[in-house]
Amino acid sequence: MRTFWHEGQLAHRPASEFFNGALHPAADKVERAEHILAAIGRTEAPHLPDEATLQAILEDVHSADYLALLSTAHAEWRAAGREGDAMPYAFPVRRRPLRLERIDARLGQHSYDTCTPVAEGTWPALLAGTATVLGALEAVLGGEHAFALTRPPGHHAGTDTMGGYSYLNWAAIAAIRSGRRTAVLDIDYHHGNGTQDMLAGREGLSFASIHADPVSDYPYFWGHADENGDNIRNWPLPRGTLLEAYDAALAEGCAWIGEQSPELLVVSFGADTWEGDPISHFALRTEDYARLARRIAGLGLPTLVVMEGGYAVEALGHNVASFLSGF
Ligand code: OKP
Ligand code: ZN
Image (cartoon, rainbow, N blue to C red; front, side):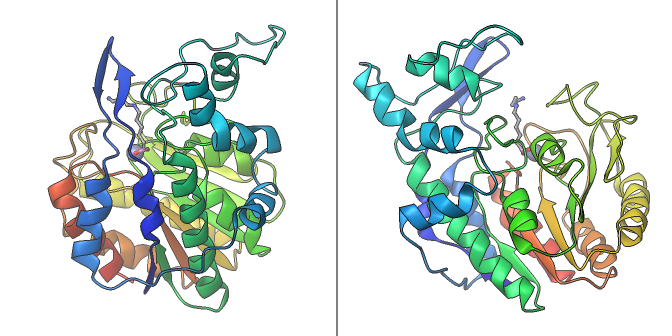
């Protein structure tokens, strides 16, 4: 398994997120990446193309006005006289006319929660993350397995929306840019709503997700059991899920992916399914991840693993190393 990481991704340092009526320290801390790096050892640094080159690549996947907002939101926020991270608080109700001048209106148009601030270093970190994904994709197109240590997560980001700590959708970028028949398997605790929306109905691409039932868990409005399409399958599971039930869903997911006859697999891996995760409620153990990975590796496909969630920072490195060992 080749591993890719660019240290520019550390520049993303959001301070807080707002939920349950209060501000909380941001769960996506830089320590997450540091613990993973300590556990997996040496990584390859991808070539970092210039901003214009990366922007052009990203415009095949995300909308140009959304990328423009991401790149300037923090500077516009400061120019408006604010301190701290750019954070939306007002969202356009569907069918309302848009008057998109003020930074608050533009943030609201392209966000759907108050957990995903644009911090000073967010945009450069996203460019570095894009380079990490592109480096890993190149290895996978060459027939190898690769791990892209992406941070922040990506699977909640849509074509033109940020949410759930996600701004650019790493799995969708890899799948769309691959130019091959590609399946995305999302095994983060939370449903990969952004990836699902971006891949729905796209020829040659498919999406399977195993996640906490959105009746009880974020993102609430996506990922329900009956939410399936020609190229979409969802396996919502209840809080408290242990390895046996999880692995049974994964077996069904892998069988369905096999039927899509992909040439490549992208795995959105979140270790927030671990028993001690501070914001999640499944009960997988560290050693379980190696077993789940062996089942996925049994598909026999060149596989690109992108990092999504996992917030128990002390255990995160061990959980990621366990998962990667299964390949
Ligand atoms: C991102 B990923 C905390 C509320 C936070 C956002 C969760 C984003 C998870 N109880 N809601 O999928 O790990
Ligand atoms: Zn998650």
